[in-house]
Image 1: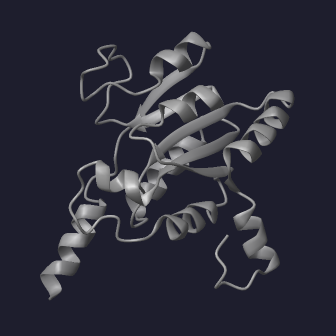
Image 2: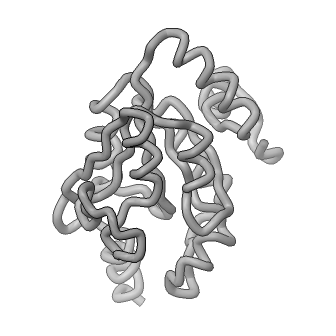
Image 3: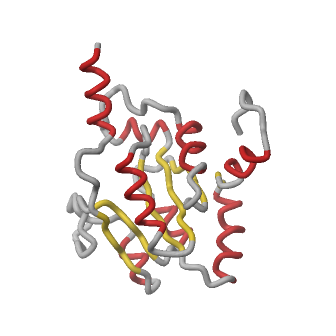
Length: 180
């Protein structure tokens, strides 16, 4: 997937965690057959930091396999982030996340929300940060978790995880800019 990096066995393992929709469906069929509990979360994960690790590790602990939907560069721009975002390109973000031992798989999505992915995956657990509300049902609310209705209809759970205070990509970016 990244032509400038020489493939090593370890890198091949990391790259094998990066799915297309087709390879994800195959992997999910095997996981469902094994009766594994699938956890899904999504985000930009621009500069991976301690807060991300804490959040993702806690999400992974909610099931047997953690699948992460990662916004493409284009979808990050559409989210209204500042113009410098994403700082790292989507391929770099995929490789970094896939290198985490507790992450089962990573998949890019270009839509404004991960609704299509959630519909495809039918995760057992849908996880977002605690800035969302797992009980919000008003789809127009900023606290609504996209796809929560689909997960619940399939007898799944919707959970939120508190953020580790003081750790964010914006905080890191501001520290870097202050050094100039």
